[in-house]
Image (tube, rainbow, N blue to C red; front, side, top):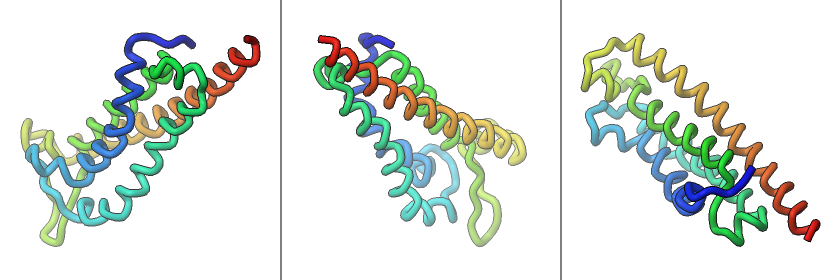
Length: 155
């Protein structure tokens, strides 16, 4: 695992993205055509937890001496982060929501007229992708710490 040019972008972007994506998922999708209902309300509580979880891998990268020195993350971590971010965006445009009056349209339902079942299926895929990409990003951040400390110890 080595550090590439994309790592500099990820190194700086991972902090605001960890805040932006949950805000978009819970509330911001209303600005692009989705109805925001109960999920927006619960997002006030769960959004803080999601932001804290999304900040764990970036915090771990700070323990990698090579990443800190280069101010750029490792390539494998960059890929896992990009997949995680894209998964969050896909989830934000497909998440089913409802309020007291019934089901609300997701962004893709409003834009393209897809069915609620298709939107829910796409959301399930994106949720699985988010979970897997998060675990992979976490693993690569931890692996980066080990590699960076081994390189420093080696001299």
